[in-house]
Image (cartoon, rainbow, N blue to C red; front, side):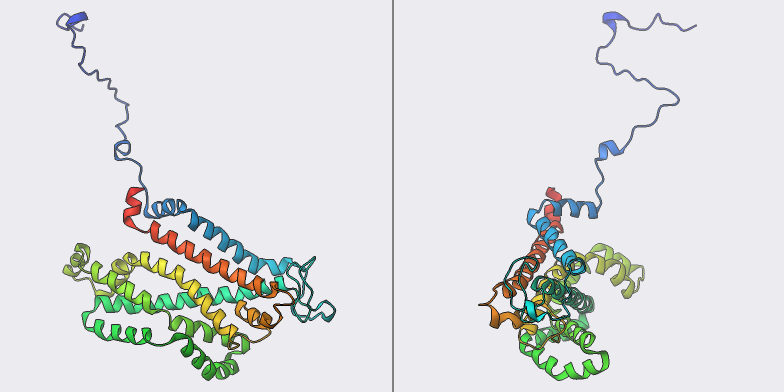
Length: 329
């Protein structure tokens, strides 16, 4: 029998005394309630990126352009490879919303097909430049003995006039590579290698600066102290921590590559006539702008919209990958 005579009751009881109700099957308190919501790096970057209205608009616009270029010509009922002389030089109307060229081919469909090659050149050339830039920047920043020679090599490329260099290399190597790989593939490989091989310098300098800062951090010094090989440190610790500026440089490098290819094609030294690109279409239509302005305005509009959308995405990624912006979010 429980003795309750000594227990305080009524007014004698302490009003502020905590009441503990415990049972054998009660679950322990959840510590995550006090720690707050866990947010991974990817979700944090995506949350910050979505707040950048310009970047979201740029992503939507670029997605529409890519889907239109790769799917649109399949859905349109036009054969852009067969000339139709009776439909030559028509103005905008239906069914040719941008009119036709001097051979009667639909201008809108040819602009979409030309976007395929221009976009592929931009993305692949960007990948080549990023690979070379990251490789040179990481080696120069991590190995002190190689820093001087690699940076002088980078300065040498920065001092070269890129467009005249591109034109000279294309004139010298276009015929041999076309004979070995074919007209279309040969020019594509040549353009990608030239554009990617002459646009990696800014990425290399950015990565080198990041590596110089990262290699003095405590976790890198700890890895060295336990005998971790430099190759393993670079692959597992250094490269993942320099991806933020690399992603931003990659997004902006796409626009540079597309503009460079368009400039070379506009000068008549790019892809052959049967492979339209935005630059080639502008070059072919510049003499007929008085007949139909959309022959020039159409490819130019797609080119400008692509470059603008890529720049907007790059701005959004730069803000989203900024640690100070993420900490305020």
